[in-house]
Image (cartoon, rainbow, N blue to C red; front, side, top):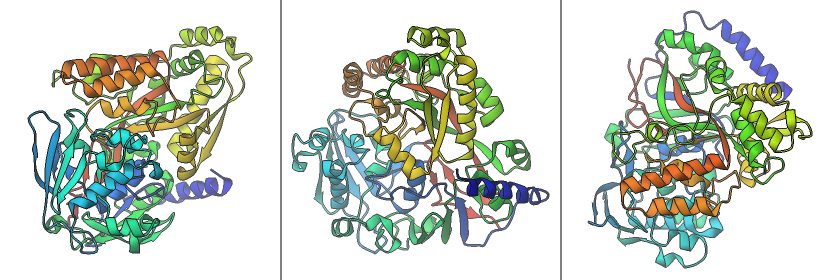
Length: 534
């Protein structure tokens, strides 16, 4: 954050103080408008290419897949009115709604889905989430250049019938279809304009809303998509997404009645906002962690990585920095996912792989790596994206590593798009990271660190890990599948690929008058059925 931003934040905090008293009762908004603080300027709104939650939250308003996620996290029919599944779980047939329309009035057809998925797998597109389509028959083979797109297991049989063949039975496939990589794109628009997803006039979607105005790095305005098949359930006439990464600015706007909903609130304000009834702490299927670039010295030494992870006091961070009811993360996969028995929790079955704040072991490992008391270890760079909370966490961890291990750490922050690019290219040593489940199964965390995963920013490559993940994906016995994933998670910690910090919660700042907002445990927020109570 440069000095201008720092001074602006101080100014906002100062003026916020004059707004605090008497502003926390329910406020009336304009009858047909709802305003949400959406975070950073999106990197892209092409659902085949996007990877971040800020992008997913915008795309969820303007696109819709074959299925959608319901209030309890279950997959529900969306563009697909119904479907059939073969007895062996390998063959699906989806029957699309004949009244599903794009925002330009064109019908949503099966070919739009086929084209979207095959083009996302096309190596030329370089989609980081292409691996999410490897469940399709020959999806991986096409993405890696071993076959052509005609062999990929998705085919439009006619305008309203889509046939899908999978590599192996996938219990969570219907939930996966609600994820943005499985959204359709308007074939004609995309084929004719490489920049279609950058401006409202060319951004054709099929969701409940459409983008009418986009002032980059400032705000995105939406109106109802009058052609949406379920328009009767869309109560809000217009939405406005404010693009800011400043928690101080977000709170000031909320208290000044300029936004109605936000998710980036100063931690120091949590108690007051909870008492006022405008802050809700929601469950969230995700893990906040520090990602190690396993190829960059001295982080190429697993003992150094493990020492750094063990020297973090997670309880202290949660109590004094994050203050959002999070749980210390002593493993990778968070709580809230079923194990083989169905009722048991994967995290409870797997247990912990770390001891929090284990300074003695951390010092021993660092000495074994050749750096007793941190001597001889060069200064390490820690990268985070511009955000007050990320900065506070980074500064606290920087101090812990200095105090506990004698290690000096330089902190660097970058704007969201630049940060994502740096992390993906491996242009860092340690980087802040957070991973939110894409679907309700442990595999959404486990397969992230496969050698060929587009989201494997750790640059981690272990053939044994790849073998375990592939074995879990092909296992038909649920108990065996979970056992293999537990073994893969253990290997991640044997190799010290990451330093988990906490399992997320999702604080949501929302006026009591705002109703019907669906806040998925997977992190995506849906305004389709939202309304303002007058």
